[in-house]
Each structure stands twice: as structure tokens, then as C-alpha cells.
Amino acid sequence: MTRSGSIELEEEINRLAAESLAVRMVLVHVLSRLSASANPEAVSAIRRGFAGAERALKERAANDSDALTPGSLAIALGVVENLKAAALGSREGKSASGASEAPASFHAESNDQWPEDDY
Image 1 (cartoon, rainbow, N blue to C red):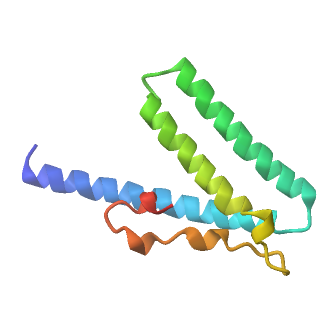
Image 2: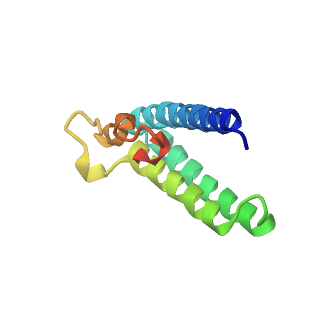
């Protein structure tokens, strides 16, 4: 691979990492606001959504090991678990207003090379 090809590849990886981080940030902040609401149905739906995502990833890994290797599955399940923790937070860690501190765990500035590894 040429130097310019390597630079283009690195730029593409950085762009995809930034896009992925942005989507996860929006998702976790929306879900955390919903989970902080007094609506137990919303919280239940969020929990079921995360459980469904975990099931779907495991099924995909079992059915198509080329698309999702054991290492990729572990990474994907870790991301789902981290998003779940950030979105739902600890019920004991909620303030009197019902707000959770979980979204504050996202600090993209701490890792400029691979921002998706920040949580």
C-alpha cells in the first residue's frame, strides 16, 4: 500500500470512528433521558431493546461466523453492555431529580486515536 493509500485508509477509519461515536452518543443520551422519566413502560422497552440486541448479536455469530468472529462478538457485546450501563445507569446512583450521571462517562477527548474506546 502506498503512503497516500495508507493516509486515506487512516482518514476513513477516523471518519468511521467519529460517525460511530456520534451515533452512540446520541443514542445513549436519548435513552438515558427516557430511562430517567417516570414512565416504567419506557424503561422496560429500553431494557428489552438491549436484551434483544444481545440476542441478535449472539444469533448472528452462531449463524455466520465469517461476519462476526468471536473477537468481534465480544467487542459488540461489550459496546451493548456499555451503552446499556450509560443509558440506564445505576438506579442507586440517581439524584433526587431522577437524573443519572451515566452519560458523563463519555469523554471522546481522552482518546484522539480511537474515540470509540473511551467507554
